[in-house]
Image (cartoon, rainbow, N blue to C red; front, top):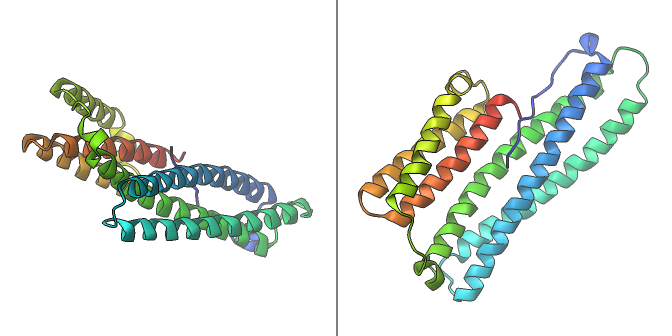
Length: 228
């Protein structure tokens, strides 16, 4: 769900309009709420991975799980600190009088917004990693192995939907000035190419996982480039 564009805000003390700083802070607060929702998705994915490993009693991916859990705690700490910072900024803004915002406060808002953007990108990266491992574990289980594979027509339909979405959003994606958006689009195209190659080689399940990642990455790329 994406997730998640926070525009860094930077103005000089003489030019810091109080209302502009307040508006930017509100946008960044809303973006942090989306970051929290992405963290919940990440947390749930890590929980499924742990359950899969416990059920299979395998140690093969314990190192991967340990790294994902460590990052989860790191993200929680970052969000807790940001929440505290946001509360302080909110209180300080209430006490501002006049049209000019103090330089220290506008600087704090800028730092808060940049921190949110960086955190959003990190969580998206690790959510993608966790989702890949989660899919691998589920598809390698006896239950997953018994699942009927998707038909070629279903694969082609999903592939064509992505192609259509790329075409409809070409202008937005081509002019994207958000680094995270461009990175997500690049990863989408890589997974799309991988899905086609894997399908051609007969690796049906792996091709569908790559296609699913491409769909998720494209959705996030479009939202990032739109500034959502």
